[in-house]
Length: 351
Image 1 (cartoon, rainbow, N blue to C red):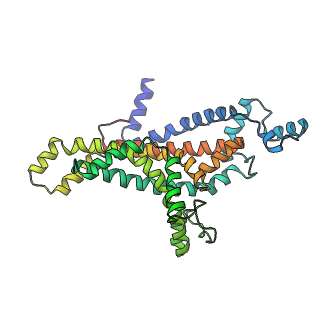
Image 2: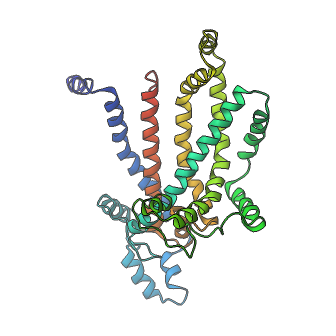
Image 3: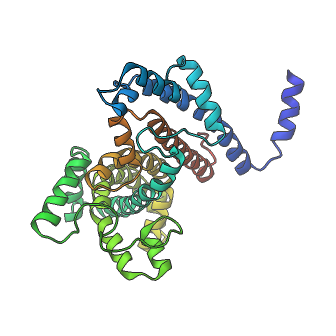
């Protein structure tokens, strides 16, 4: 055992530290994904409702329902169903949606760009708002921004995202008429741009289609603002606490006494505050994917979140399992990247 451990150390230790961190984190993804698959599979089976009965209706005969359940494999023991699911998933087959009759992989690939575009812009706006408010509040303590940020920090965590979304729709679409109708990613009379990335805003720029760009960008404003308003408060409070400690630390006072410009001092303080901020940003990305479920439903976005809601309502086992599996893979990948960045940013810390 000791000889094997020594041999492994001789092979492992000469590898550069960044590569060791990446390899170790990637190796952990496999058991994590297997655990997610097993828990998801068992939890989905606990949902109320028989998918065969929901699809065939109350007029279906018992023979028809039994034949349908046999075709879906629902008549097999649970563990046989699970092993079959794992084998098929390992070969890229997540089954066929009971409701849409399409392969689940196809449905997910069609809807993923809509959700990723929404989350991507929401995360950018969340970071800009949260970090900017935090820095200004600390640098100009007691000012209007500081006082306003305290009120905002309390309110942002107390109001749910779907309520914010409904308020924005009421004021900016119904009352003021400034925002487009909350139905979909692009206006009904505007053709979507040819698919390159799946992001309408980027694809419309590539295609040189200003009508598609302004239509898709306009419809992003309210859902992106909804997610950013809710999540920027948490990021602002965390950044404010960390940045305040660093900004008032001894080395910053020494830098100021040495005559360094204030903008250089602020930049140094913010750079030293990054590790916990990176961690929270990673958690927020995962949280945004969950929050998008309700926001997409309110704005009829047609993304993964709306697909998940429809899967639950219709007891669509393959579709719901596929969504959870893809969501888990996305979140685990984000957390892995955060862990790697965290260790690389501060070599003293082992995540």
